[in-house]
Length: 420
Image 1 (cartoon, one colour):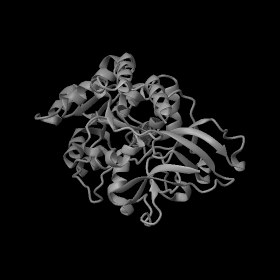
Image 2 (cartoon, helix red, strand yellow):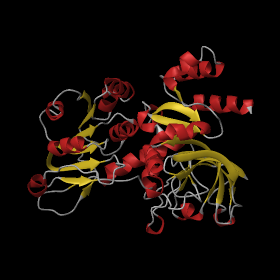
Image 3 (cartoon, one colour):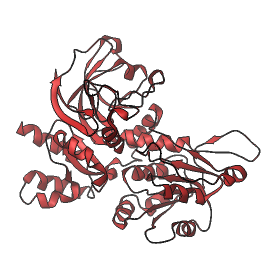
């Protein structure tokens, strides 16, 4: 079977091309990918190429398929997995396999499976690690976004606290405590806010900062203080541009030092700000993975010694984190649509990925079986003046509060299928 995919050949060398998939083996699964959202981690892999820890050294001869936030449907099941998986089932995938201690991961390391593709052969290790997950939701894009949600679930689960005189770690955030989310209204920050106000272990106060008022306003519109209050959380959005950020955050917390602080941008000054806000037994979570392997920042080790402050970091979630995210989506507790600001087809993957840091907005959602320029949802109305496809998409999204939705996805895929 032929597939069309975005393949990585080297640093900044990403190509969309058609090629033949190998014949599926008895311990593999053939699947159709429908959607993939582009992650900043993919940008880092593309610019680093073979120097990236998850990317093989021989990609110039054996290119890999990029994309690790994908959702689709199973077409054919090898005999080893008959009964456990069925043709026609929708799936999402936890791509952080941790298979035999390696960093190999779909979307970085594999030649025949990744999210930016039309069809893929899923290798045996994905099923052996129980990382191919059944997805029962209506919209494929929600299944794609279960992966980034699993990353924020994992990062909250990795945080910990202790009691004085006790060496056991109490895993998770300080329940009822004060939390800061710095540079927190990008797509992953929005996922973190959505998750932490709706999960079963919540802080009492969450202060979210950024330096762009339009991004803060959008976050406040879709993840409001009123919604957080329904779950017992005081949510404050704070613009720290041109002000003393530490003083402003302490004022927002009522003068209290912070139990948990997450940093969502790889900026030394933000790491140092987070450190300065930690109270006794405070946990600093460095979420944003830098592309610079020598990235560093100052940390107050006096407080490490006398106030038990500490740092954690995670790179992705695990399978249980993804299952939790899927359950919360099914229960209506999470709204992945708030992350999506752009849609596009497979043809726009190279340009979008290479320019990702310079494209404003949230998640860039790719539908792999169509060709479509990367398009902002906010531009649908203007484009609709001359294109009936976007006119209808604009109507649908406006009826859903300006957000991408299952109805819009279904309409787009149906209309594009009729053109082919």
